[in-house]
Length: 421
Image (cartoon, rainbow, N blue to C red; front, side):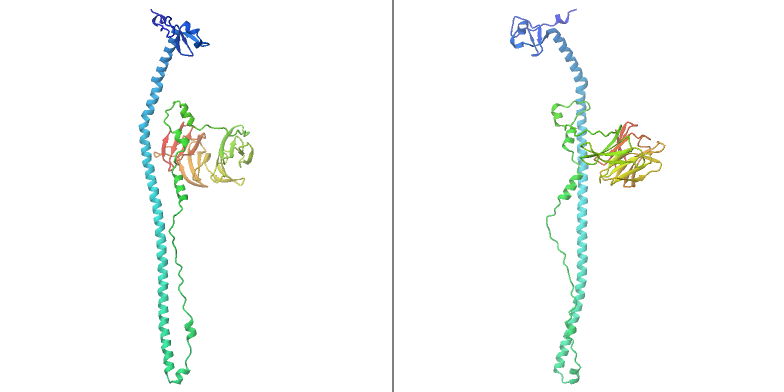
């Protein structure tokens, strides 16, 4: 059988035509002859046998072909197959947003129309009252004029009469007539058309329209799982920066919750919660009422600390450094807690026998919603597992990490299951 070396014909040297290229220059990546090796052009370069280099390159080609066919090409095909779906999703989402915007506009127009109608009704009612008062004043004044006319005629008659007894009985009524009746006082409402300053209203409306940030837009680029980002794509991403490193002295740090950009609440395997600033300094210490460590902590929109305590089945709030029980449960133990964008509290509750799990939404100490069963009456979450977490996404859906089920359960604000990832 012919060897690989026998089956490969070495090329002739382009610089030294009488010689065959039996070597390969690693730096220049070209075949060279023995005379090329000694030239200045290839000084200090590394050389390998031409046949050996050929065999190595053949292996590289086979390996690259295998990766392109079996890995790279299928990933690009996967992206290509998803693009039409994403295009449809964009169109459908655009329709939904357009409908929502139209509905919001109609609601605003309805509110404005109602306000104008109310003002018009108030104006008409006030005008009617004024007109009645004017009519009454007119009647009184008309009667008084008639009476004055009679007095005038009587006075003239007395001046012309020769009846002494009538004149002697005369009594002046001028004092009475000088007293004018009370006039109707009318305060005319005014309306000055002007350009209404609606910046605050527009800002509020814009806040309802959740436009992705630039970072989110970049992260939404089409990348299939496992794809490596190009250097250009990587340069678009925000680079995380370490701001501070805080030693909390907890043996096990379980929970953190930001009070502000500069202060962070922490809790761990101790009956104490610590508020740190970014310098690592303790700003405040709060001890649990039960003496056991909290299951979870959260910060309300008002800046108050909330913690759950499974030992005494309580949900507590800290106001002015004082722990105040917010909710005391019966038959249920609170676990994770989350403060929503509306100020409500979402709390994961586990039954005392660890056979049931549910999520309850509280407004203050009032239960507003309970999420536990699906439409078929089956439990939404695996029972009795504390190792869960929950949050609220930008659509106000409730997202629950169910560790025992190995899934993320997404439930709408109305309590309906949207997805299970």
